[in-house]
Length: 108
Image (tube, rainbow, N blue to C red):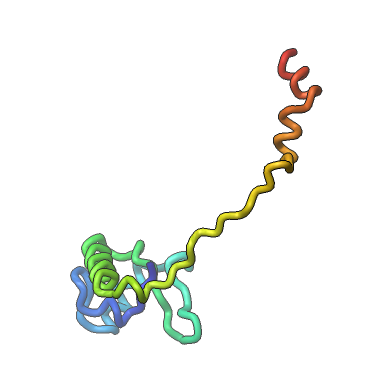
């Protein structure tokens, strides 16, 4: 989960100003692994993995509260796609497993 500086202002374990959060997070998120650019924006987002545990907990609680407040009908998820399997078609791996040459190799 990634968050922006403005989302971190005032959370437990973080400074109360955007400038203070930027200074604090610059030390913590020194690796490119912890940063990414938000799509369609100049905003840089930071992984919550580089934040103090108390801040991570507060962000997770906020996220769960938002999910609980959302109407389940609004969440659009795709149902799992089940492929049809033809019963009379033998898969290559299954054909190899049943080959006489492989059976002989196993017995030796």
